[in-house]
Length: 216
Image (cartoon, rainbow, N blue to C red; front, side, top):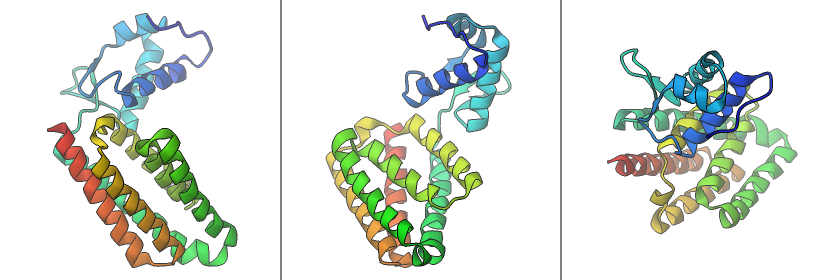
């Protein structure tokens, strides 16, 4: 049984707990979220619990089926293609803005890209490829300094986590993706938009196909 929630923002706490369980796959894709059962487990009323579920629905982590109950997001092949299509658009927009509008005029930003890649290699050794990959792209998008676009990006990342399988990151996939990240960074630092877009497109296409393969 979960520990009862004691502070004022019960909905926020319930939201945080549920979100963690969904992205960690303790609540697997397709699982039904029964508000009465969860409210009892958390030791709160159904009102803040429902508020938490509605927020998760806004994040794209929870869906409804014919208006009957809430379920953890379970992607179809179409969902996966759409999610990664948006991810690709944002990644391309990020590197384009960095190369055209930020790096030529900001030496500190240029150094930050170098540090992002150094962090990627360090995180890769310490925490594994998936976390290193997420942190890498997150930092690149964050450098755009566009809070609205970043919020959309984070929602997309949350959805990807619900179907991304750690076991899917086999050695061949990891080596290929590592090379793609190297090319993305080298292209950004070399002010090579074409090379950066090619590397991002290759990376997203591979991720899309792997995710589809994993759900079949």
